[in-house]
Length: 190
Image (cartoon, rainbow, N blue to C red; front, side, top):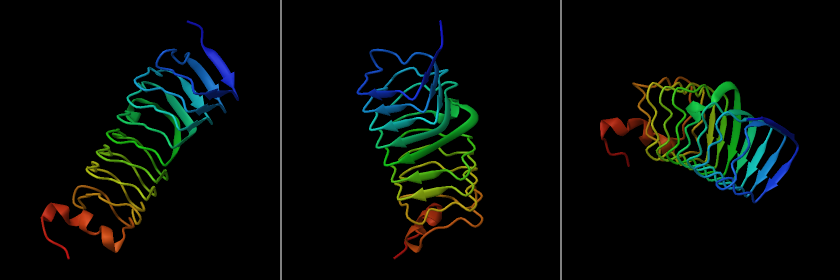
């Protein structure tokens, strides 16, 4: 199968559930209101692309390269980012729903998570050093053996992080969020 190389193309309202995204490289492309739900985008290389108001829920990301990718206002349920090609992995996320997704064992230093739903997301064994969680809902998100040193959780909420099983040195939390660090002790805070 021949691989495509596409530069600076705008894909608007394309249903990739019916017509599969051709394998290849996409550079500085924009995907607007596109549907990738349950699609196979394995072995695709995306560089400096933008996804706006797209549905990527349950898309297969096996060996997918995401390099300098911006996601805004996207539905991204159940994605397994740990299956992506980790070389050059760099994403920015704003106002997206990533519930039930997984970043298991990924290096995500200095990533900014902004205005996101991250319910039941797996951050186990991740390196989130100096990352920022800005106004994120982390209900039942999993942090286990996670490095969150110097990470900023001050504006996020509903997290439960066990300081005994995670590295949290110099992480920032608001006074209102301290209960999320004490959950395991089953104490009442008023």
